Image (cartoon, rainbow, N blue to C red; front, top):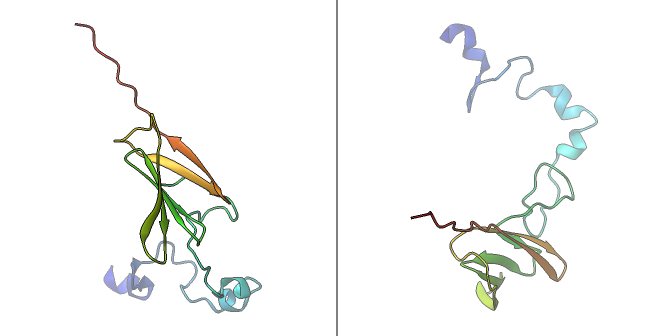
Length: 123
């Protein structure tokens, strides 16, 4: 088995299909080659790798100028240059022990709080 698969083993183990070599010359010279070459990296990270220009809720959001997060029922704005909290907003009724999700658009943030109401058991 080792001899039969030796040419298909790369740095991450056995190739999943073996149909195309990892460094196929056609892939490097095809029409998609220019798109595959990394250009200038964005000034701040994005979290959605699946859909271009589509945002998804997350625990921490940034637009490059500020970092926004929800922690223990407080919405916090952090300056990435100084790493200091510049603003804190107490969100009444927010679940202080659960996780919330955020969407950031310009100067607006949408908070999606995951509430888990407690239901008393009958005695």
